[in-house]
Length: 53
Image 1: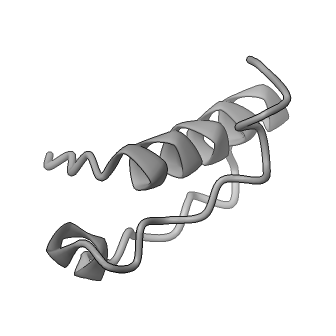
Image 2: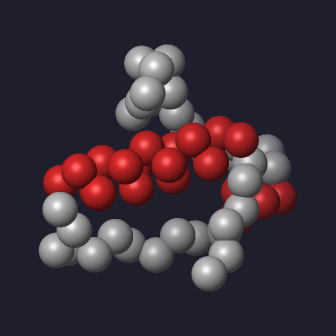
């Protein structure tokens, strides 16, 4: 993943989509999966993408 979005991405706060609250990640996630989930959350937040289960 490019350094420009890894760990530095902030959610778009002026978007109505930014009001959704994400559930906490499980405590027992392996480190690699936790890192991937955090990167995806940051990326989706910047893009304003909303994902539902």
